[in-house]
Length: 139
Image (tube, rainbow, N blue to C red):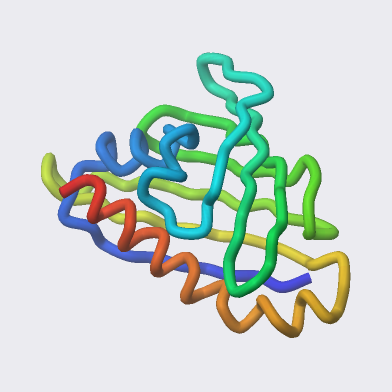
C-alpha cells in the first residue's frame, strides 16, 4: 500500500476551503476530467457519491464516502472503484481568518499493477492540482 502526505498553506479561510471540497456535487464545474457526480446519499455530516472520471484516455468511476467534521476534517473512504483500497484524511487548520493549512494523509492501492504503474506517478501532482483548483474556485 502506498502512502502520501501533502501539506500546504492557503490564502483562504479553513471554512471556505472545507466548504468547496465538501460540496462534491460541484466538482464537474471546476475539476477537469470529472464528467459527472451522482449523489447516492447526503446527510448532515456524510456524503456518498460516484464520480465519473475521464483523464488521459481512461474512463473510470469511483464511489467515495465523505465523512465531514465541518471546517476541521474530511475523511474519504472507498466504497467502489479502481482501487483495491483508498482512504484519506484532510485536515484544515486555521492560521487566521484569511489563511489556513490543509494536510492530506492518504493510503491507497490500485486493483491492477498496470493501473498502478500508469497512475501512481501522477498522484502527488494530482493533489497539488486539486488544491490549486480549489484555490481558484475560492478566489
